Amino acid sequence: MPLGVALAVLSIALHSSLTHEVMHGHPFKNIHLNAALVFPALSFTIPYMRFRDTHLAHHVDSRLTDPYDDPESCYLDPKVWSGLNRLERVLLIFNNTLLGRLVVGPAIGQYAFMRGDLRLIKAGDRRVLVGWIWHIPAVALPLWWIVEISVMPVWAYLIAVYFGLSILKIRTYLEHRAHTLSRGRTVIIEDRGILAFLFLNNNFHSVHHMHPDVCWYDLPVLYESEKDRFLAVNEGYHYRSYGDVFRRYFFKAKEPVAHPLWSSHG
Image 1 (cartoon, rainbow, N blue to C red):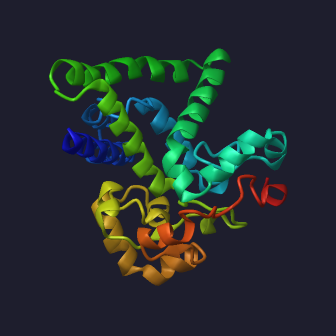
Image 2: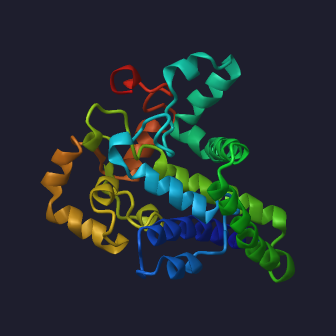
């Protein structure tokens, strides 16, 4: 069973990356056909419609890292931060280390996402509600498979889900930084290893934001063809590998939780 759980972890992480690729229009031009390819919600956590809507909103680069208008921002408004209790602050500071992002990041992210969507549903946002309704059969399909076909217990699969989400947190940990220029907020990590494959080269994240229609397998080639230009555009925000990221930030927070530039750019 340990091997089965490990394979499930990798499959869940890769499925999320494939879902990201699909919502950017690959491999088909038909959005419904693309969505059908990743319909089973292997991670159980985020409805496809909600992932698509929030992620495409995130691609408005002028709003990157905005605590309110960027749905994927991990920064808080300094006023919100100042209103948190001590336990909440300690937890979020820990979450800003790479270790913390792996250990508690999936739980914190899921809680914040569901709390926000529940607020929208209560306010009458029907599109958000529909997204969660469609999520029911998307979860039911892999759950049925696990219960009726697979020899893996449900509890073991849930562990795999959490670890799969933890792997994804490695990618999102420093994808974006606070910077006065929107073009300087998105990272490039020159990694070509197993993590780059699981992330479908989305570690070349600034390249992806500049060319969101480019397929995952073309991103490294595009980057190498104009490397100096890409690094100039993103103000040199890059790392040589994920090993470099682990060495620098496994026990150390890269930035504060409260947005350090909010008073000037908010």
